[in-house]
Amino acid sequence: MSDLDLGGLSLEEAEREIYAHIVSRNPEHDFEPTLDRVREACDLLGSPQHAYKVVHLTGTNGKTSTARMTESLVREHGLRTGLFTSPHLSSVRERIQIDGEPISAEAFVRLWLDVAPIIHLVDVRSGKAGGPRMSFFEVLVVLAYAAFADAPVDVAVVEVGMGGVWDATNVADGDVAILTPVGLDHQEWLGDSLQDIAAEKAGIIKNGASVVIAEQSESVAPVFAAAVAEHGARALWEDQDVEVVERQPGVGGQLATLRTPAATYSDIFIPLYGPYQAHNAVLALAATELLLADGADPESLSGEVVETAFANVTSPGRLEAVRTAPLILVDAAHNPHGVEALVGAIEESFAFETLVGVVGVLRDKDADGILAALEPALDHVVVTASSSPRAIPVEELAALAQQIYGEDRVTVADSVPDAIDRAVQLAERDNDLGAGVLVVGSITLVADARALTGADRRKGMGRAR
Image (cartoon, rainbow, N blue to C red; front, top):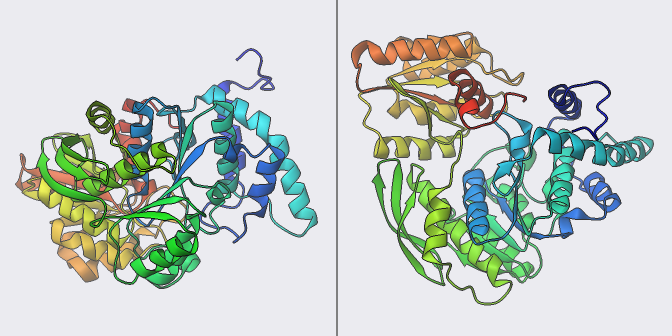
């Protein structure tokens, strides 16, 4: 650190100041449909996004878990990896990972000092043309692509922030695209129909690339098929070319047999819960085979690579246990599609006699749909608000919950600590041993809960959000 001039600030203080500056820009959920600013910044940096192969992921749910699985497979194969995901839970540095680890505070500060002059130049040019500064998400994308080139990595696994066509990550040309299941979310930006949303997400398919497509609804599949044909891409479709042959829930996760065009991989342990994680795994496996084939017919990966890569996968905030006695689970599901899958996973893998939900939802989400999808699984719900300024006020969310659950099954808590305390008391009131608490509804709520329970510290990340 001695060669960094931090102006008298400690490393931690410098990281906080940099993050505060980036956050002060347009938020990541508020963007303009243009890639011009990101492309200009990348051009000025020498086009770092073209310095490595790219696996690009989009979809409504499952992106982050699938990205983490893909990265683990590629890294276990022996290649150096970059991983870009969003949003983060504890630290912004989670979004930019090298070889499976978030970049260090020192690397983050050094990266910013190197790239900040370019960001400033693009801001000035945009302002003179009547445009805005680069947004929070645009800046992070540029930082990630620069970090990956500087490492350097062999392969970057990149998750879109939102959509596809106009997502800032789309200045990269994905050698392989992964399209996870599409549902309704972000309608105000992506469109009101599944077809419109799918058309936006299909924008990551590049000419001559390879694509792995999860099982989709009848209205979405034709949109993706048309995009594949338009770009002359090679497509593998779930349940046609790749499939989960069988799966068996078990302690700590599940065993799955996965089929790709290259091989059938039997009895692979995946340390994550829910049928959807097995489906995420087969997408990641097929995409990795396509990437390594580099346009040729894919060959199977070694069984040892596959077993080790999946065994080492983690996905924080995705049906994650953060406390026992009673068991407290957190899950970042924040739309009805994701919540429905979550409920199925809980019913399959856990035997709660009483399950109490702690629910907080952001303003731009379908709160009614989320609460309704949770209702069959919850004995009681404690509504609260996360630390996000976009959180629906507690009383407003409570009124929605009472319409679905009835007044007797709804408790109001003004803060997340109070909500978790109340939920634990309610869960243990009647069933001391079979009690559980589920924290769900928004990623910021999960982040708050993980910080309160110490899960973020146990995972080795600080609280500099």
